[in-house]
Length: 279
Ligand code: GUN
Image (cartoon, rainbow, N blue to C red; front, side, top):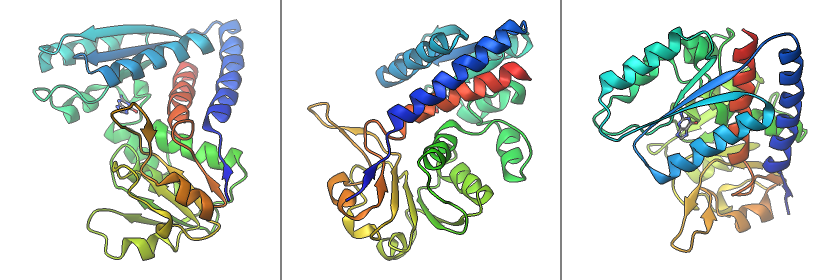
């Protein structure tokens, strides 16, 4: 039976700490503003964007919201980003992904000034993370490191298996785990004998984007299991990439869905916004 890692509680703690820090920065005359851009009206993106703006208000940052229609051209979006890059009142810029198919995501990410790249998606941010230089770190993997640290999970010398190699989670997660002196294996759809490999993990981080893909058979007894997935069924019930009940029986610690990794992403976005404010 596992101890549940409470992401809701830990993210609330982080937001309290940030709120205090923002108060101090404001007393010293600083102001923080996050510009949030959404193109189109994808309902899931709408929820994320609202939660991000709410978190800004909670910790004492301003947010500027740009809700652009689906038919916005790439040039119009790039012009807006360029204007926000030059606006000294804006410290952080975030373009909610995915963008509509006629807009090239990479071009958009590259257009955001690395100094304002609070999502940590710009190639310069990723490059800095790779060679251990200061820069913004992608929020979900940064949040997972905070969850583990604040839950007392030792990473040094441990074998961490990451299932999934996305630019947003899997790859930066591997780099952050290396920074914590873990031994890291990144598994993906071409990995052979995945189940056996996962069973060698002290820390198993799953970001495959497939509902309940990782069953109890993938979990070594006593492992720490981190579930990044989020899926909804017809009845609006939420599920992760991990079959929770089975993994719960085997793991020493586990993140639930919802209430595990999810809330940490916004907490770390706020962390990055406060960082941007101090730059
Ligand atoms: N879409 C899904 N996750 C994210 C995220 O962390 N940042 C942005 N900008 N878009 C997303």
